[in-house]
Image 1 (spheres, rainbow, N blue to C red):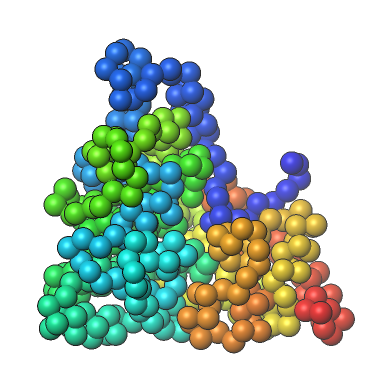
Image 2: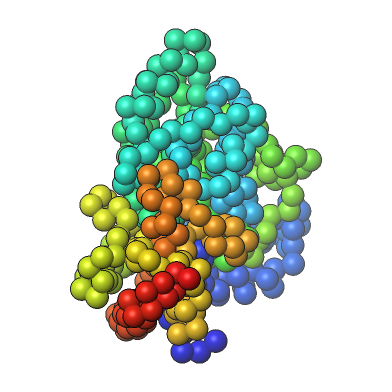
Length: 379
């Protein structure tokens, strides 16, 4: 594919060169990492090295990194009744968290108009459960995949732990884009995904703060991953995951993406003052902008951008390619008509200013067409 502008990094990031090299090298290794011979030891060495690199990304002990097939599986592994019999999740979580994992019931925590968790409501509910002798597992993402809004994780952790609960943090979108330290966040469990930070698809991890955090295996029948995830490890994907984690240059990359975000949003406001940028008044990821053009229709806008050579999305990429109403914007109280017009633009380290300028030119043309045709794109 040539002459394309890719602005959908939150769906998946292009493979980093270091990750590609690591995958290719690992594919030539014959052994099973569970085997004791030399070939097996070499495969095991690759997995162990990647475990160190992934752990370093979030300030964790490598022994507490459990490799999975991706972020969704890691979330389901985390969300299982154990010491905590109740599950509370924010209303803007990833669908794999909203589904509740292996809990029979899920309680949803409301968010404010910017999409931030209502910590007062969390404290009230945990106090009620604590008085009844119940502990809760709370799941709160580090940053939202649609709006980029950063959640008050450390403040939530203080509340959760005061009531003897546990905190799981889905950090899939945050990794590589903002500082992450499992100790500083005071999180008990943290989810990562390789392909969101420039690694290959098909690898993820659940990270524990310490070995005392109880986990109930989702995949059983083998001793791999400290008996917490049976099945032969995907050595090549894990190798790429580790290489991608090690290749992140957070300060430089985040500064670059923040500059692009300012360029993009200044251009959006100049071209279409009526456009709405969600979460613009609060802390967001430096690479994410969710914008709506009143009167537009996201599905048509996405297709029009694609035909013009620009890849964007209408929000989460977790609906089998379908453009569906955003549960995130609904939870924020956004009017359905405006929510249906929302486009997500997400950048990465390799995004250039020319990519932003190309999208803005397409955006101006779409806005002009919509204005001229009345119903236009919304029809």
